Every structure is written in structure tokens, then in C-alpha cells.
Image (cartoon, rainbow, N blue to C red; front, side):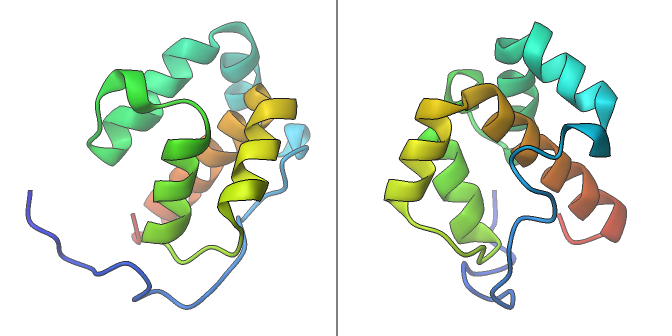
Length: 104
């Protein structure tokens, strides 16, 4: 796969929704809470990664780096440790919004 945009070529930003913004997309949240592993596979597929890589700190960090989203490895670790399902849903919502905006 060819690299079309270098990491950091996007303006620094935040995730487009908060970790606990469950009501922003109830369908995504239900999917994430009732089939967390399936959502991880969906995220990994969206990002062109192995299905086993779709959950947790590593995929979140890769995504943050790719889209120049503020944060740190420590914050990624703590977010996924204490609320893994919420962090996964946030990532999926952000991917879906970027697809709608044509920047994914």
C-alpha cells in the first residue's frame, strides 16, 4: 500500500467526539459494547491492519499519529485500560466521521 499522506500532514486536532459521547451514535456504541471484538476487526479493516490489531492502545496511537490528533501513548494506554469499549467506540465514530468528510 502506498503512503499518500505523511503522518503530521494534517493540522493538529482532537478526536471529533469524546470518549463518553455514547449518544452521538447509539448504533456504534451498541455494536462496541455487545461485540467489542467485532468492532476491533472493523476498525483494523478500515485502517488496513490485521484484525487482531484493532483493539487497544497500539491502534489508537497509530490512528492519532496518522491524523495528528493530540494525545500521548500514556493517555492512550490509560483510556483503553479503564474504558476499552468507550475508547474503541470513539475511534470508530472518528473513522466514520472522517469517511463522511472525505479525509479518511
